[in-house]
Image (cartoon, rainbow, N blue to C red; front, side):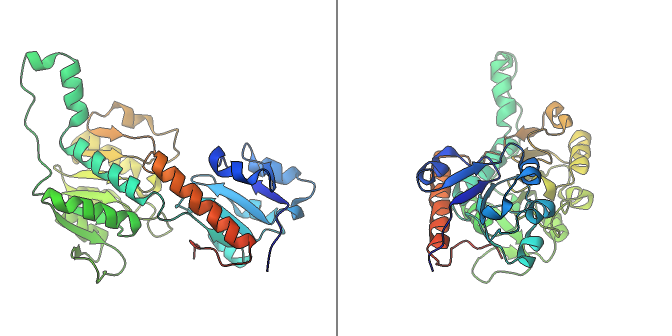
Length: 315
């Protein structure tokens, strides 16, 4: 059955390229500046059956309660940890994301961060720019080849990270709730066991109630003083205070971080550390990834409006 959508509520800053094809067909009501304030003062919230969200913008129980006619949340991006999914399920609200659109680009960045951290590329750049190369040789450091790399989460992104690591002559292990029969890598039943085995840990797991804070002090201690942590998932998966302590004390050799708690207002202590490579959550921020994300986002909406089951439904 064909559905109508006279108005669509935009609760987050969706890229203009994704919204442009819709403006001639629908009335897009932009509440992204202050969505909760908008909803509290909206005179006719029953007009909105469809809402758009993105990334780190929350959709809370209160916000959902202020949208009595909500039937579909079309999410621009993969991570839905900021959505009150349990409330949406209780209301039988359909939620889709754009899984798969940016996985390759995020995997690329994970490898870039790993190589940059292990091979000390930022330090080498500063060494050359500071004129020190004329005085002394750059000190030897570790190589990536021969290291044991643990991948925490082996979904779309984690699988691509592991595939990219294989040509680097590394040994790969992973932790997921259940082992996968379709991969050649070693499965570990717990994150701690994986970290005790691994030289380095790459986080590619979704942020859920079970994974938030799971990269904690025991996990970081297990990696040890030669270990490196890479995070291209969510900042909330890591105990940041424990990570900062480990990095500043030398209990962990280094980290490459694309995500942080409270980003973009990150903990200022990271800025003073020389053994960290910092990245502005740009894993999926490539032109190719944005184009693919937009295509999936629009296709999901079109299928919903046509009365067909959308793809990428969030369970």
